[in-house]
Amino acid sequence: MTQAAEPHPALQNLEYEDGVLLWGGRKLTDVADELCGTPFYAYDRQRMSQRVQELRRALPEDLHLHYAMKANPMPELVAHMVGLVDGLDVASAGELQVALGTGVDPAHVSFAGPGKQDFELDAAIRAGINVNMESEGEMRRIAKLAAQINIQPSVAIRVNSPFELKTSGMKMGGRPSPFGVDAERVPAMLRQLKSLGLGFRGFHVYSGSQNLRVEAIQESMNSTVDLILELAGSTDLGVSFVNIGGGLGIPYFPKERPLDLDELSDTAEKAVRRLKQSLDDPEVIMELGRYLVGEAGIYVCRVIDIKESRGARYAITDGGLHHHLAASGNFGQVIRKNYPLAAVVRKKADTEITVVGPLCTPLDLLGDRVSIDHLEEGSLVAILQSGAYGKTASPTDFLSHPLCKEILI
Image 1 (cartoon, rainbow, N blue to C red):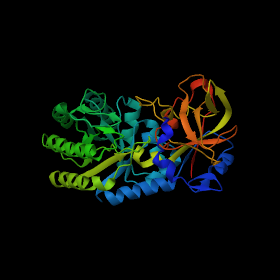
Image 2 (cartoon, helix red, strand yellow; image 1 turned 180 degrees about the vertical axis):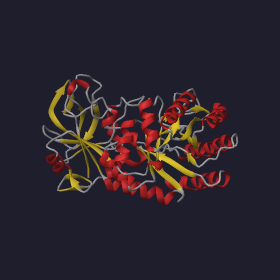
Image 3 (tube, rainbow, N blue to C red; image 1 turned 45 degrees about the vertical axis):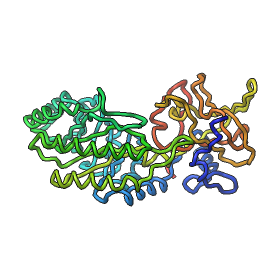
Image 4 (spheres, rainbow, N blue to C red; image 1 turned 180 degrees about the horizontal axis):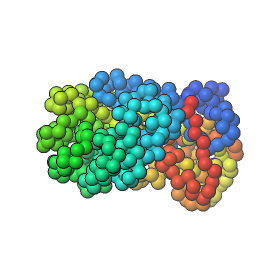
């Protein structure tokens, strides 16, 4: 039995006009013509807006939403997100430059990630954004840089929690980690911080990502609140900022199902209430990336050749892992599974075929024995669930093929 025996839910909700797949209300054949070819990513701004509206309805009004730019830093997309969310989270000086270019209030931007270089910290301090410190050494470097330019920096401590977000695609707590300061070391760090005269704001706890189990997210959220309150009780420094992470996942594969936000609502409400009542009304933030943009993106490539080999049929395209590493199964998958694929032009002649890219490696696999509308030379193939960790998470220079394009629709 092939993977296509159970179609992905996203394939059942696609819209077509005259047999051509629509994205953002436009025919993808027209988008390809406008961009003068393939491959390309297309991002639907309306889908992003709807996702934020869904979150606003389900979550507490005073839970602030931040967009984690690492998911997709395309400048036009980030500018659109700024009009929807309450702030941005960046992970490099490059992302910071894009963020500030949108006109966002720097007070609503935070910078996380290990190994921040001095030039990045200097830029963050001068911009007036919040720096989520990942170590005691980083804290001392921030203090030294700030003293040189006579600016008190805004800082928070990223905490490596003693627990993990269970069943996550990527676990980031409960173990030795380059991310954040071990929770048991935080009280001593807070004492050092106080003597350095830094502008302490609060805590950032991120224990995992890409989770589709509400129960696991609820458990992690409650544990995160407990941890933050415990750490806050170890210091007389005021806490005005609390980032409780995110971890909300999207369904990539056939048996996965979307999260029911309504099931998360009560837990989120109680978590925010506890933090606000216990810590003198801090700003409580949920940081989301993939969940906001992942399902709003699609990757489109063109079939260059159709061939047969020992009973198997192959569609060879101009796209591949150099543009979309995640779809090839080489970005975090333990057992490779297909992303949902669709032919851009419907021909109602389902066929089983393997879709590959042009690279000289068997890793360049986009769809293994997928059931899809008839493909031929020149056909367009679309890969769904591609709005997050696509182009910028891929080895775009591998084998020196042309770069792909991006468009916000």
